[in-house]
Image (cartoon, rainbow, N blue to C red; front, side, top):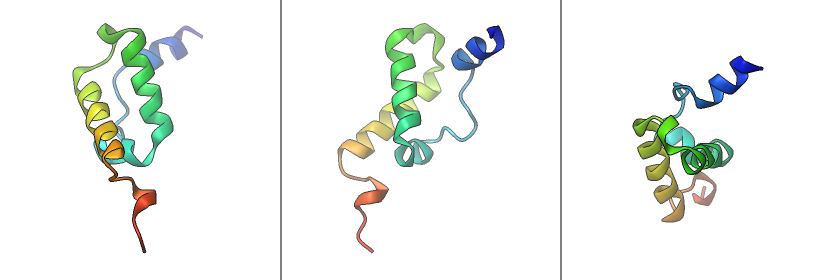
Length: 68
């Protein structure tokens, strides 16, 4: 149980790129929640990538909006 708690506050997953966060809104919400609850435990890099992914989704660069 302790390992699970530490893993949640640990470093970002290697797949937590801006592009990955844009296509995975659930992970983006999870990171935003972690940032909101305890900003000191979240890596600045993942915080910035989450913010950029949120901006991309908000401004309409969502993969599900692309017309085929």
